[in-house]
Length: 430
Image (tube, rainbow, N blue to C red; front, side, top):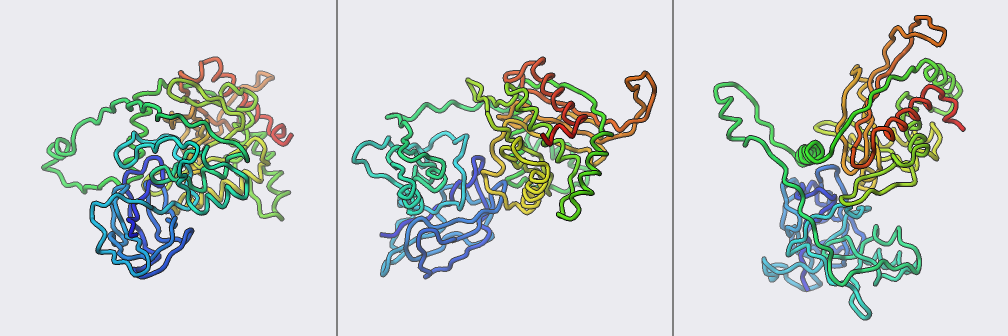
């Protein structure tokens, strides 16, 4: 029986995407796990793999097409001897393809007729799962009837079973939980209103791509709904700079060169362990306190930014953090990060010091509890412990804090721990 292949939601914020490239053509036979296409989302270019076996009967969306809405039919998969043209245009899709290595969305959109949660799975109920998910479940001894799928139409995919424990079954409610409406976001003046203001001036109109739309929506939400407050401290970097130079000389043969940012990441990761109440996120009606230090780091790319997450950063060496950060930043610039590599974390770092900015205030990336804005190290006169005026390299840092998650004294304790790590860099090797 012919089935439609739909444009999938490859990230939590994706509403539409660009079908960048087809890797199959009409008449090709595909099986589960074969890569069918490359799709550009608001954050990355991802591979799109087949879930079921069949023949590509008809390609409905040409490669290079932008603005393809999620759940729009993009191709038809048929069985041997079947005619793709016989499939009704409005037929309800039975199967889809799945994003390779796609992570489950932490903030699902409100259900629609096409995306509403499937009924709870009970004894004897049919389980919808991709062949790859079934194979992994069989290998790990996992009962699929207790797992909620995050794939198209509730289908269980690879990401759903990889983190499950053998024999464990998630509790499934008989009725889906009510979805709370998101707070209304003020949008300001319309495009036509603004354009009329500049009707007599020369300008170039730049359409927003998916990434820019997402950044605009999330940061507007952040400033309107998160009660920010700010804590500012200076840190003296001379001891760190000397220690870094010594380490880099010792690491020359290994091809490793530590940056100041690597030390900042490690200092923050350790501080989250020292002040665990700051290792937290806002979850609507509660606070989630994390145990590992998962540190997000802002990476500027053309047209926007990513915040790849260094997981378990407190457990990693400076050289390991440096190598991982270089890899993540490099792939961020080419939009090759998978969703699980830029989602999560409780805390973020935004460093504009390398661009000469001495201090600034960063906007919290929800649901994070805080973000650290890092400025440039500048030589300044300071008074030392002996009361003498000396020249020191001083760096300004501003911690933006969500007051719903972290109170002032708690945020101050965290920032103090970060500074103590940076001003005593050898302690970070312990």
